[in-house]
Image (cartoon, rainbow, N blue to C red; front, side, top):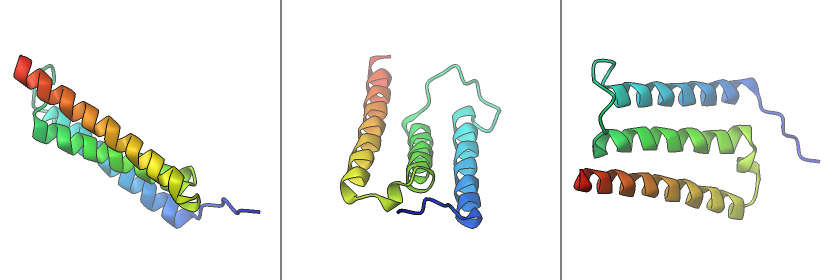
Length: 100
């Protein structure tokens, strides 16, 4: 039987990393709280926000949902899923920037 017990130290580290990534995303998206957020983010800010979100998703999949214990096919599937989502956001951001 597989033990799915998550010790407190890695759980706190993952929580701290995901919380930090959330703060980084918010600060980047809002320009540190001083920018008008009604406009589109630039590609650089989008990259930071998407990278932070992808890292958060991967950490949650790995540690909280037990993907780290599963076979390589599942890890590959979820990695591909995260890449496709990120690529879609970048393509949409790029196209919006060209069209408007």
